[in-house]
Image 1 (cartoon, one colour):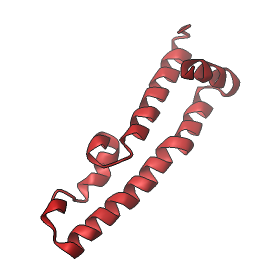
Image 2 (image 1 turned 45 degrees about the vertical axis):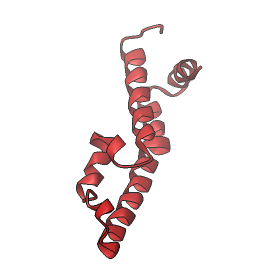
Image 3 (image 1 turned 60 degrees about the vertical axis):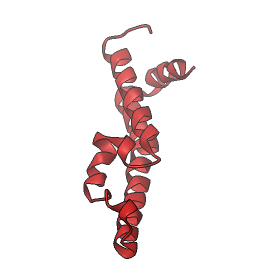
Image 4 (image 1 turned 30 degrees about the horizontal axis):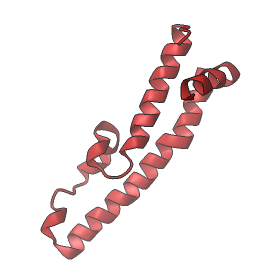
Amino acid sequence: MSGHLVGRSLNKEGLINYIGDRTNNILYPLLVWGAIEITFKILSARLTHLTIHTNVSPMKYFKLITDPRQTGRFWYLNALFCIGVIYASIKSILKLKL
């Protein structure tokens, strides 16, 4: 079902607009809410001095994109964005009838 909707969106909007919509709807929320969550984890680790939070560092911001499963709850947004963009690019550029 999702692949069918991607095809309709590509025909209607084009690849660039489709990627822009995916960025606005998926990637920005991932970055915003992920940054908020990581910031709170860093602050709580500094305030509480608990050993459970020792693996929280500012590098987690970078891992929102490179390794999202290590950052918390929002890993699926990264996967959803990347798979959607890859599929749309292949479908649009190679003109495949998938």
